[in-house]
Image (cartoon, rainbow, N blue to C red; front, side, top):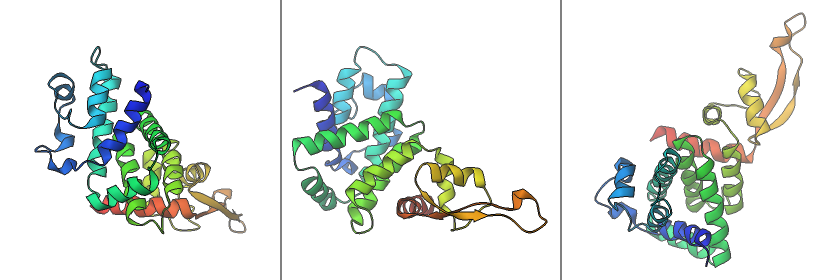
Amino acid sequence: MTKKLEVEKALVESISLDISSNAIELTEVAIDSVLDEGVLQDIPIINSLVGIYKVGKTITQKYYIKKIINFLNTFGSIDEASKIRFIKEELSTDKDKEKFGETILLLIEKADEIEKSILYAKIFKMHIEHKDFCSYSESIRICKMVDKSFYDDLLYLIKFQNGDMTNQHITDELYKNGFLSFGGIDGGTIGGHIEDGGIIYNINKYGEILKKVLSETEST
């Protein structure tokens, strides 16, 4: 078994744990204490990464572990029965675990903001708790769409309404990254400025899912 596969499977093992039983809040843990003092090494993915990084502690490595801790802390808010059911139904084989682990770990590694690693966990929380609204494949797709987006642009979805042309630059980006659909062109008023018109966008299924996730995140 390769080290890569071990790390991927370690992530799945970690999300199945009841990490709420830890005596300390995960996000309050100093990364140096994780690397130097063995704090949180009972969590498989942390233990695996500490082993990999034992010969070096770069800023990039520390930030990666911090993002994973935030992902796990958010995933830990899902009740145990739902997490067990998710793993049994969606990650039942080694191949499923490998693919899921590879996808999520890569997304977390690439995340340019901590908030994105938290958002990935919240997207899967939405799937686990509302399967009819957000499927597993939609969760993966939306996470990949988030990866390509500027986080503050995503927050605009919370207040976005179909036909909104108040911030064309942001809506252009949301459309480019797959959260909005083309709804036509507004040529503006007769005799008015060209800026009065613009492209009309409507929110699509992926945008609706992420809007719900973000709305619930901002309200807590």
